[in-house]
Figure 1 (cartoon, rainbow over the protein chains, first blue to last red):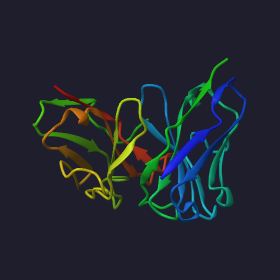
Figure 2 (tube, rainbow over the protein chains, first blue to last red):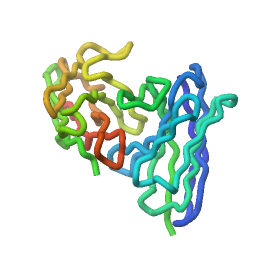
Figure 3 (cartoon, rainbow over the protein chains, first blue to last red):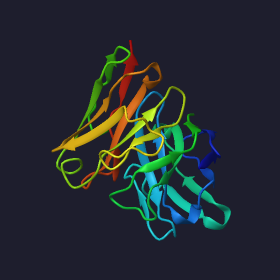
Length: 122
Length: 112
């Protein structure tokens, strides 16, 4: 399993970015996928998840209405559109593979990318 | 923000046994939801260590074991090795909070 994130950078508050995750080494369209972030020097925070067929998308309350998760199974890619960025969104964003096809209460993250840094600062 | 509480740090000499606790509540660990554990070596991404309360994925040494009881879970590392020095996080699902999947506060394991 290989997950490679891209699209991060430094932006001003209120601006937008589109994060991407290129997946390989497994049957991408058989698994749900997630985004998890880690602020500098702190712990992990789950951000969003999407089922194998894009039928279910879930978000943490802290990003609901500002972030949109999507996937393109034909391109083996996962995306996170991040709008109205805030200083507190500054973090390393990880793409993570689910152990299951759907987003459920049982879910865990069995493979992770190396992360992409998003810095929000004026 | 984390609803699962872990001790900030634990330490032990090589060969010793250390345990890391993860304390939650009735809306997460104390309910039907499983606990999973991750290891994060310095400067790297997290890695799945234990899934479904006590199951080790292929390739994870049997020095790592975990259990769940009531509203808490614990990870044990026996025969501590220098390469075990890392941050460890528990994770579960929470039925009441704004973040559906919740992580612990993290524990730094130091090998003396």
